[in-house]
Amino acid sequence: MALKNTQYDTIMREYYRKQAENKRRQDACIQDACTSVPGLSKIDGLIAALSVEQARKLLDGDASALADLKEQIAILGDQRKTLLRSQGYPEDYLEMHYTCPDCRDTGFQGSQKCHCFKQAVIDLLYTQSNIRDILAEENFDTFSFDYYSEQIVNPATGLSALATMQKLVTECKEFIRFFDQIPDNFFFYGETGVGKTFLTHCISRELLQSAHSVIYFSAFELFDLFSKTTFGRGDDISELQQMHSYIFDCDLLIIDDLGTELTNTFVSSQLFLCINERLIRKKSTIISTNMPMNIFRDTYSERVFSRISSNYRIRKLIGDDIRLKKKLEKNLTSPNLVVN
Image (cartoon, rainbow, N blue to C red):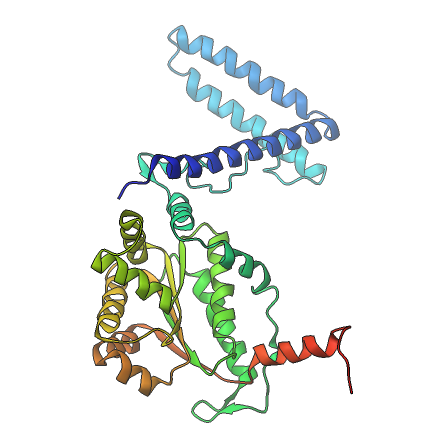
């Protein structure tokens, strides 16, 4: 489904804003470097003069003019990099730095919409501003192992809660590092408050910052959308249908708190469809749930369980309820706390 004109204009205005902002940043860098680095302006002047001279030759029929120009500009470009390095500047200090290098902040690669444009559509059709606010607080920079105990041990693995999370964080960072090369999936399960959602937030932030398209849904929100698109309910069914297609094709889909929705045969069939379709398209998915594996299998059918057990890294998180710990810490440090 096509975007409405107003929606398209909203997205494109943001691209124009990014272009203008990055151009201002480049102009400021050029002015700074030309003031601070002796000889830099002279090299830029030589490059400009060469371009005019070689263009004149090209118009006069000199077929070798373009190749000569490229060679001479390359030499001068190396001299410019050397000058910048000598004054403590990075080699690419004068170059334009794009928010999305793939489309150079135009939203398009050739005639095709860029992946960043698709994420912009996702953000517009499915309000993720609250998620983005959360990601500013919950990420690998703010992650702490201090909440995980060495005394709580998983008898199946022999690993403590701390060792389990240390190993899992390493896996998640590898998942991010090789995201574009190796399609992979995670299934996190465990008691409430052990860090499943926080970990998905950490992964989301890293991938969003590297210009990947990420959709984050609670299980209730996801199946509510599937219900509306399947049965034709909703104020703007065309927008819902467009979001429905993005669910199957985004770079990463996160389904959080599976099991909190009202589960029935429709939900089970839609979950299978979603999982299976994304596996076929080699798209990564992360699912989190509080349900033990045996109850999950009985709730969502054997075929759903089979797809997940065969294609997902199933990881059990253990430990204390971190949300409760943080709440208690906040209460203890509150200046308004009255102790009787």
